[in-house]
Each structure stands twice: as C-alpha cells, then as structure tokens.
Length: 232
Image 1 (cartoon, rainbow, N blue to C red):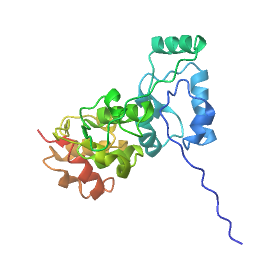
Image 2 (spheres, one colour):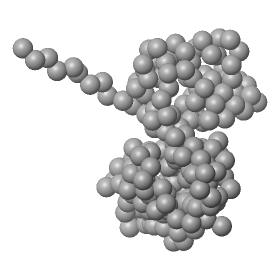
Image 3 (cartoon, rainbow, N blue to C red):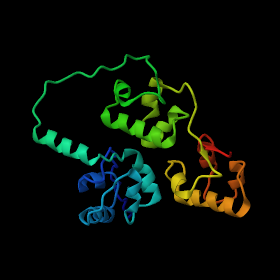
Image 4 (tube, helix red, strand yellow):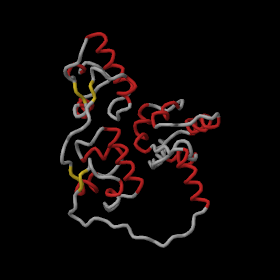
C-alpha cells in the first residue's frame, strides 16, 4: 500500500530573526534542526544586524534564504526597546478605518511607499513592507509579475499597479565582487562565483550570452538578470 506524505502548508510572513519564535520559523518551512541552530546562535550572543547575516545559519540552503530574504526585517536596538515599551503600556484604541483606493486606481510600483501601498485592497503593513523591501533589494521592478517572487497573487494585484519608468539599478558585472552580487535576489553564490571566475580567466564580459555554457545558469535566469546588469 502506497502512503502519501502530507505536505505542511508554508506560511511566509515578515519576521525579525533576532526575536522570532520557533513556531513561526517552523510555519515558514524551516526544519527543527535549522530552527535549533538559529536559537543556538542567538543563545551564544549572535545578533543578526542585516538580512544577509541570516545566511550564517548552518543548514540553511541558498534557496531557502532566497525565499525568506524578502520577509526579513531587522529592527534597530532602539526600535526594539520602544516596541517593548509600547506593548507593556498598550491600551485599547478605537477602531480606525483605513482608506482604500477605489477600483480602477493604479499606482507606480516603483514609486509607492508603504502608506500608499496599504491603500490597495488586500495589502496591509506586512505585504507593503515586503514589497518595498524586495524592490530595494532588486533595484526596482521591471514587471508587475515580479510580485510572484514574494508569493503575491499577480491576478489579485496586477490591476492596481503600473510601471512608468523601467529604470532599474544595474550592476556592472565587470567590477562587482561575489558578496555584493549574491546579495541581489536574482544571483546566488554559485552564479556570482562563476561570473567572477570567468573574468579572472577569460577577461571582461560583454554579454550574458558568454555564460550560456555554465550549468549554474538557465535561460530563465538570463531573462531576469538582463534587466539588472551592465558591462561598462
């Protein structure tokens, strides 16, 4: 008799790796072994000062980090103290209605701040922060369909957004180092390493086509990368 292993639903949500509890980590798809490694790191005095520090966790794969990185929000120490103070003194406040844009409204996905994003029906603080954070890491959106990268429904949100100027921030592949390149969502460590090694062995890059024989890259990778690279 064949048994089918039940798949647990993964729930991705904005989190601070310095304070998030084990239940939240598990719901985001991390194994108990990785969660234990996170808590050991914190127990020894380890602090995540920037999202990239989360890569330090033993057992966390590049793919897992790429999936979780848009949701990492690290508060400054002063912000944590203020947050704890507010929680301790929290009192019930009257319910306030948040204004939402009427159907037919569109906003520029590359210009909207969190306040404006929260006026879109279905977008709250968490999603607004995820969009702005991911936009910053990308260097700008070139397509509304990139919202799928952070598990948002393009069908639900596409009608609310437009991209007026496709002026993404471009990375010079002939000057960038491995650490800086792998910080971009569309480049992993192995791809960044391959690019730097290519330069060292064969000279300057003039096109992504020069990397087509490398197994680290797929055609889909090139289609996404071309919007964020230059060869000056």
